[in-house]
Length: 175
Length: 214
Image (cartoon, rainbow over all chains, first blue to last red; front, side, top):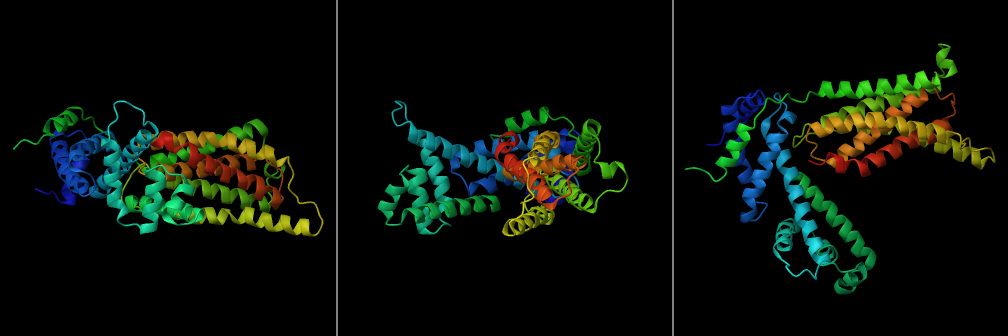
């Protein structure tokens, strides 16, 4: 069952007062909403972890919900924050892996995960921006090497990276 | 059918404690209290500027200090509100207040350029550095207050929250300094007082996000 906005707001207000039954219903409804929200954004095996992390944030930050405001925009803001954080962590792990080629127990999974999540967002970028970010920020080429590889000037590579990252950030913020 | 996350949810429910919602006016009360504490401490330590003590304050002081006061209130309001996330919230009002306050440094630059083109003294002297340093020092009170408030909430954009806290703190700090600074020259107020807000905003944008992540 998908609860309506007014019911969720009422459940959240009751939860803030310590009503466990209302809180159980709220978390179950939130879990359903979060599953739908993240399903389009992350790989299936990441879904449960991300939903749990977000529910934990809902639990820790319950006081930041305003009983006189709608509940879904609040939940969406928490979910978006956790999603951006998830991408940041995955991306950082991918960067660390690029710096640690000599690690014996090297796993490609975090790097691949980061790339798949990013590639979904990349679809909204022009080709030149995608390519510049891909080569410099993911594959670790220098600006000069990326310039040689793509035929774009070095300054154009920098501009495309800057504009592409800015656009990606905006896409995530709006998501 | 049981869901794999049911145990997890049951654990959260077991841990539930009543949570008092973060009220905007309570957060704003904290910010105003920090502003007043800073201003009163400054007056107690260094005394009011002579015209203020004499009950006949200069117009330039009233306008500039008033602008910094309004900027403090507007940016504090926006920063406090950032503790309560919601997709679709717009918190742009402070930008117009910041643009209004920016009239001071922009006018100062015009005046300084005019002075220099006429071969006159620029009107900006290193003594003003003291105002800026005091302003930055005093801004820490408001910055700390807003950081504590924001950490109790859930700022979904820590970079923006850091910038707002920095601007609020810088303008609160320089408002306190303005109460004792006897200089009425636009060049001094625009450059040194204005720079305090700019630097505090930059510092907030750079340093605070790591304290505000959750």
